[in-house]
Length: 426
Ligand code: CMC
Figure 1 (cartoon, rainbow, N blue to C red):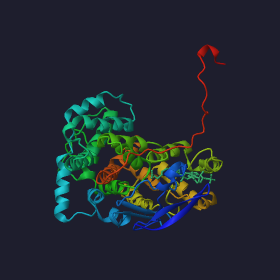
Figure 2 (cartoon, rainbow, N blue to C red; figure 1 turned 135 degrees about the vertical axis):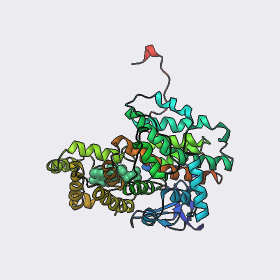
Figure 3 (cartoon, rainbow, N blue to C red; figure 1 turned 135 degrees about the horizontal axis):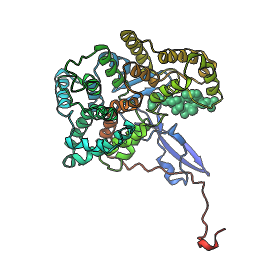
Figure 4 (cartoon, helix red, strand yellow; figure 1 turned 45 degrees about the vertical axis):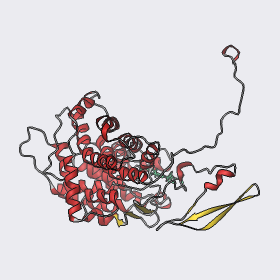
C-alpha cells in the first residue's frame, strides 16, 4: 500500500515516486514515473531492485531470517516433510491432515515418466553432465503434455505443478543411472519422496533386499526443504522472466535449471568439493587462503548476496551434517579438510570483515558426499528441491495480470555511423 511519496528532482523537474510498504522488510520506491523523465534506473546485479510483489518467501539478510509463507525455515526443516513445505509454497498455508494426504497421493500418482522419455537419455553421451541432461529432459516434458499447456487455464497450471514436483526425483535419478550405465529404476510409491529418490538412485533391479536408512532419508528430506525456495534469486527470477513471455512452464523450469547451474548459484555445492580436491590436504589450507585473499580464487560455499550475518539454512544443515557424519561413522580426509577450512575461515579477519560465512551449499556438499552422492549430482538435487519454489513463483505470477519482463540498458557502444563497403574498410 502506498502511503507517502518520495521526491526525485532531475533536470529541474520534480517527480513524485510512491513509497509502497509490504508486510515485512524494506519498503520500495515505485519508480514507474521515471518513464516520463528521460532516464532509466541503473542497478547492475539488481542489488536494490524489486521487480515483483510476492507472498511466498521473506528473507531478512541482516537478521539471518528466512520465512516461507511466514513459517521460519528451521521450524519447517526440523518438523515438516519437504512435500508439506512444497504444499505451503504452492497454496499459502501448511496442509491440514486431509490436504496433506490428498497432495501426497497426487504426487505419488505422477512419479513415473513417459516411457518414450528414455530415448532422450540415450541421445546423451554417457559422460554428459547430469545438469545438461536435466535442462534437456525437463524442457522436453512440454512435448509430452500438449493438452495441458494452456497457461491461462488454472487446472492446467495446477496439474503441471504436481507433475513437475512428482517427476523431478525420477528424472534426476535417471540422469545419474544413465551416467553409471545402470538400468533406470521405476519409482516405488510405497516409499516417501526422499526414500523414493534415494531408492531410484542407489537400488538396482538385482538388489532384492534394498534397505532404507532413516538418518540418510531424513537428511535428504531436509536438504530438499532447505533448498525449496529463496525468493527472487537468479534462477527464480529467470523462471519468472521466461514465464512473463507466456512460455510453457516446463520450458520456464528448464531455464531455471540452466541459471542454477552456475558456480555462483546452485553450482556452488559441486564447486565446494572441487575446491577440496584442489586443496588436497589440511597442510595446504594456509597457501590456499593466501590465494583467496589475493582474489585469485573464491572460497566456494562461503558468502551470500543477501545473508550478511549468517545463513539460517546453513545452521540447520550444519546440525544435519554432524548427525549424518556421526551416524555413518565416516572418516574421510576430505570431510576433515572441509571442517578445518570452516574453522580457519570463521576465525580469519578477511572473512569476518566481509561477513563471509559458510552458506547452505558448504554443508549440503559435505552431507551429499558423505552419503555417497557423486559430486556431479549435487546441483541436480538443488534443482529437484527448488522446483517447488520455481513453480510456486510461476503460479503466483500467473494468478494476477503481469507484464512481459523487458529491462532497458545503459548503452556505451558506438554512436551512429555510416555503412562502409567491405573493399573500403580499413
Ligand atoms: N571467497 C572470497 N571472497 C569473497 C567470497 C568468497 N566466497 N565472496 C565474496 N567475497 C569477497 C569479494 O571479493 C568482495 O571483497 P572486496 O570487497 O574486498 O572486493 C566482498 O567479499 C563482497 O563480495 P561481493 O562479490 O560483493 O558479494 P556478492 O553479494 O556479489 O556475491 C556470492 C555473493 C554468493 C556470489 C559470492 O559470495 C560467491 O561467489 N560465493 C562463492 C560461491 C557460493 O558459495 N555461492 C553459493 C551461494 S548460496 C546458494 C544460492 O543461494 O545459490
